[in-house]
Length: 156
Image (cartoon, rainbow, N blue to C red; front, side, top):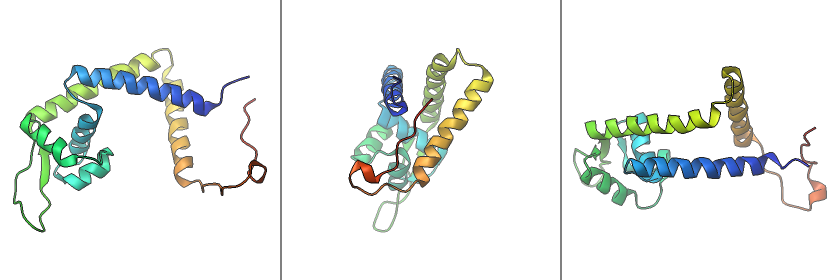
C-alpha cells in the first residue's frame, strides 16, 4: 500500500528544512534571519511589523533586527518616535549575503530535481502551486464523526 501523499510531503519538508538550515548556517545565518533578509530584499523599505508578516518571524523581531543591524546587514534610518514606523533596508553587505544564500539554496533545489526533465519540473511546480491554492481556498470540514465527512481521495 502506498503511503499518503501528505506523509511524503512531511518527509520532504523535513529533509529540505534540514538541508536549508545547514546551508544557511554555513553562511552565518539562521533560517529566521534569512527569512527577514529575504523579505526585505523582496520588499525594500519595509517596517518591522511588515517584515514580521512577510517572513513569518513573529517573536523577537526587534532583537533580530538589532542583531542584523549590528552585523551590518541592514539599516534603520529615519525618525524614531510615536507614530513613526521605522523603515528598514538592506545594506550592500546584506544584499550580497541574500544573493549568496539564494544561490546556495538553488543548489539544494538542483540536487533534489536533477533527475527530472524540464517538463517534469514544470509539471511539479504547477502541481505544487495548485495544491497550495486548493488549501488556501478550500473550506475547512466541520468537526464531527468521520462518517459525516467525504471519503478521502484514493490514488490508483
